Length: 198
Image (cartoon, rainbow, N blue to C red):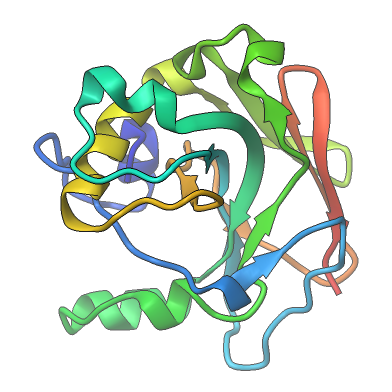
């Protein structure tokens, strides 16, 4: 919920005071271009393309002005969401984890050093193509909560460790995936993510 237009498309009320945080287990990770297999428990699995930040050092209670020291690389990832289950949990005021943290629901691309992309995580454009057509486009400057502020916020509650990954929210344009589709994620012109849905 870090881009205003995405909140509008899903009918979420604006939240301008605190970021919304949830966790995915390590069993959710899918990398190296391996295919994503649609789970049998959901009839509405949707893609959400996001910039993903790689944490490079241990940190707790990190001040926003020092947060840049705690990440070194970025990529594009997909936060797959079982939307039917998420809507059900939301309606009951229940946690979302089962709709977000299922096996292989956190697809990550090839990480690029932030310096290679200009050094400023808040000046990145990214997009997701499905079968060659762009379905999502984002600019990290549009984030409601900047990466440094997210890191500061999360580190108040839990220690960040080297290798942790922070998905930073999705722009408008989310939608369902189907068997046979090819998803490709880009940071600028760099193709960093490429896999099929099975």
